[in-house]
Length: 173
Image 1 (cartoon, rainbow, N blue to C red):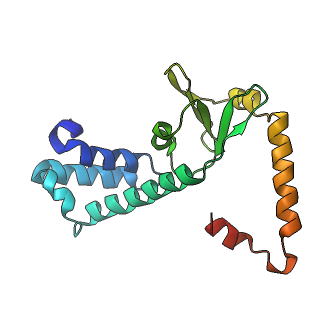
Image 2: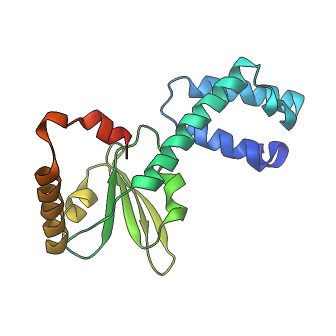
């Protein structure tokens, strides 16, 4: 109904807001949808309305986090040769990362939730409530372990102890 009456643009905003970790998202979405159904889909441009403004603010936060993870996500090869990325986003953005990569598993550690994408086109969202899947796939290949050790050795050897600034390094990712 939202997609049919209000269009894809409004639907995508609502989808991202629903996947946020904002405690007041239900109220914001509810009041925004009430006004949008009453006044029409053009009302989405009325950012002077408190609920529409809050909707855009949450949408921007979720979209920015998804873009950030798309840019820095790192896949490691596990012992069975599977490419696995471990993420801990604030919002539930795993749905927004899936179209960007191929042949992989993305595991959201905070939510015990993973997305499995296979070469034959079969995709699976899996709720790992007991962390059983994560324990099975959470291993590194020998090559990956060697690369990690090499990177840490390089990083530590070029670092100037007096100038170490982890916050700045995190911001520069």
